[in-house]
Amino acid sequence: MTSFIIVDDDIGIREIIKKIIKKHDLGIVLAECEEGEQAEALVREHQPDIVFIDLLLPGRNGIQILNAVRPFCENTAFIMISQANSEKLVTQAYQSGIEFFIHKPINVLEIVFIVNKVLDNRNIRQAMSQICKTTSQYSNASPATGNKDYNSVQKTKIYKIFSELGILGEKGTQDIFKMVQIAEKYIHQDRVDYQLSQIFQHISLQSNQDVRTIEQRVRRTIAKALENTANIGIEDYYNERFEAYNSSLFDFKEVRIEMDFINQKSKYHGKVNVKKFVEGLLFITNG
Image 1 (tube, rainbow, N blue to C red):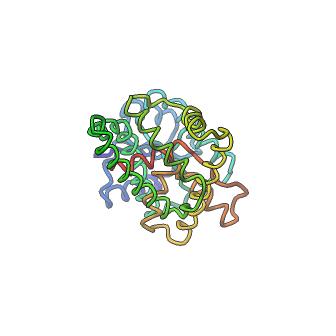
Image 2: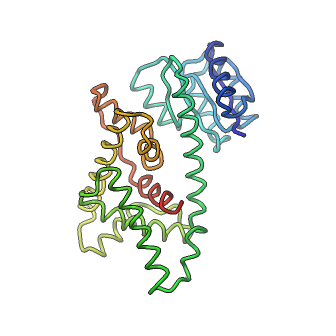
Image 3: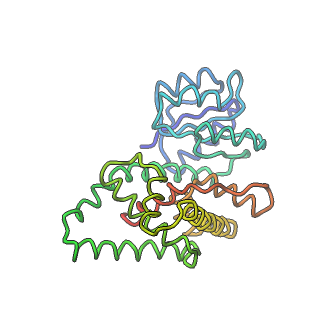
């Protein structure tokens, strides 16, 4: 069962979040508090799955608390809640390692949606460490049969996703497919700390093309996918494709930033995370 700690100096907010967690059967609230020092002690002691934490607290703010407890709570996800609309503060919060930022007033559907996304992200990270087990059945297959069939099925799945993201005609899709295959080999060899530069260099040698050209092509393609996904979310926040891809292939906060850009609420585009996109494709197609 998912465990929570709620940190907010407004008792009303704490009560709302507790009721949402209980009503929607999201898990159990282990503790709650209203100020920074107590929050730090509670989080270290309980090490919950998820912490809801206000940005602006008496004594120490949410970012300071997160920075203090993060080394001791590597498996805890932090969801920050605040009335603050400062883009600088929100950016600092994400840089400190929060999963999501929720603006007050609290929205029930948003709380439920984001908790589920945090759990989805955790499942994806866990599954990535097990990908080598999923693919091991193909390691001894005959090159003329097993691997060929597997690669064909994998390519069909990946290109279906490209189609749903609206990037099937983009030049970078072929590069991305190659990246997925190379990343899978690295993970199968327990080389989970591989660098993107290694993959780009590998493709460069195969295709006799400049590394920078390949990288730019890939980033443009993923940026287009991010834009298309954000547009889907603007039209229908609960669209199946939007829910399937907004955090499995992208950093959800960047999808939200891209949505704000499209709606002219921000001057900045969402940022592209190439490695997450590639590993997300690998996870989905091995699921």
